[in-house]
Image 1 (cartoon, rainbow, N blue to C red):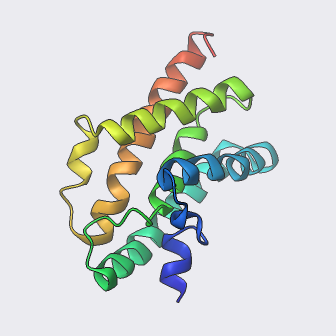
Image 2 (cartoon, rainbow, N blue to C red; image 1 turned 90 degrees about the horizontal axis):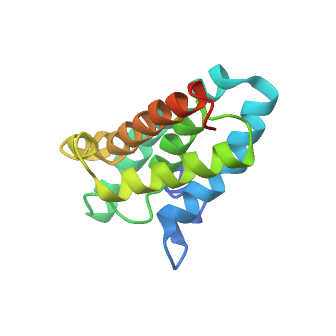
Length: 149
C-alpha cells in the first residue's frame, strides 16, 4: 500500500534500533543533493510537499494500525530534517548541526514542538517535526548569519 511505503520512508521505519534517528540520517543525502543541485528554495518546497504527503500517509497508516504515532511512521522526520537543512550551509558541519539540533528538539518535545502533537491523526504526527525543523532552521540561520557555521 502506498501509505505504508510513504509513511515508513520506503521501509526505513522498520529499523530495529532508533528508526526515527535512522530516518533523519537517511534524509540527509537527499537533502544535500537537492540543496546542491536546486538550492534552498527547492529543499524548502520539497519539505512542504513531503509534509503534505505525510499528513495523508501517516494518518492512513496510524488509523490502520491503531497507533497515535506509530514508531515506524518516519516520514515526519524526513520533512522536518529537510526543513532544517534548507537553512543550513552546504557543509558537513552545517548538516551535522542541523541533524543534531533537529533530533534534540524532536525528541525533547519542548514547547512549542509539543503543540504539534495535540493535532489529530496525520496532522499531529507530522506537525511537531515541522515545528522542530523550523526551530532548527532558525537557529542554524542565526549561527550562519553570525559566521559561526
